[in-house]
Image (cartoon, rainbow, N blue to C red; front, side, top):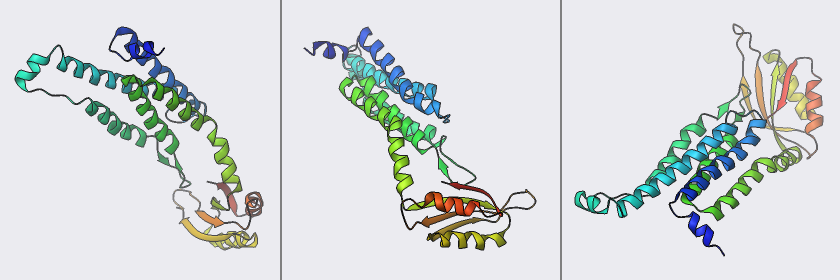
Length: 241
C-alpha cells in the first residue's frame, strides 16, 4: 500500500521535484501567518529557508550516493569519506544568524521577534526533513507548526489577560511624577517588585519612562490599573508589554 512512498524516498526526478515543491509550499504557508502580522520575516523568507534546507539535504544525499556508488573507486583511492549529517548541521547553525536578525528590543524595553526566529528555525528543520524524504514527519511537523502560529496566539492572549503579573511601560512628564504613578499602582492593590527607569534626555526631547513589573491583586485587575494610571495628567503613554 505504501510502495509509492518508498519510491518517493529514492533519488529520482519525481522524488526531487516533490520534495522541493513541498518545501516551498509548506514553508510559505507557515510564513503567510507572519506576513499578515507584518513581521520582519514573512511569506518569502520562510519559503526560501525551507526550500534551501531541502536543497541542502538533497545535496548531502546525492553526494553520499555518488561517493558510495559512481565515485566509489575514486573515493577509495584518495580516501574520501562523506558524512550526510554535516550539511544539515550547517543549516541549523546558519539559521541562527538569520533568526537573530529578526529579534529586536524596542524603545519600550520589549523584546520582539522571538516567535518569528523560532518559526524560521522550525521551518529550516522541516525543510531538512522534506529533503530527506521523511514525509510522515513533514506532515505532522507542518500541521503542528502551523497550528502553533495560527491558533495558540489566542490561548496566549487569554493567559496574559488572566495573569496576575504584568509588565507596564509608562512614559511621563518628569521624574517628580514617578511617585504619583507608584502611588496609583499601590492604590489599586498592585505590588511593584521591579522598576526599570529611563531618565530621558532633555537635549533629545525624550521624556522619562519606566517599565514596572507588577503583581496584581486579582486576575481581572489589568483594565482597572491601566485606567487608573491613564487618568494622571502627567502620563503621556501607557502600554502593557
